[in-house]
Image (cartoon, rainbow, N blue to C red):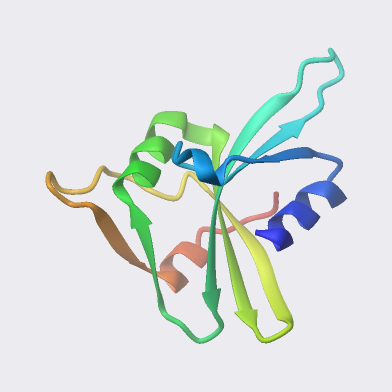
Length: 119
């Protein structure tokens, strides 16, 4: 998560760690606007060891992303010892709710990274 906090800070955004609240994302980023009201972006962070091919996303995270549209971002961080690759930001990462009864869904990291773009 620290890589995402650092990236958001570099963009001039204020951040808040909400991961313990189980609200469907880990970090709230506040993007200041000229008119004085900050936009909120909700960022779910998935950190994986470099070389891993899959990531698990909970039903709550997927449904939150679908409900929030472009307010929600998935951030993928690949870790190799002290080396960090990312964060790679994926806007609107999911297209459908999980099957009824599914608690989580496993995604191929490369398929998510293919949708990543600049923040």
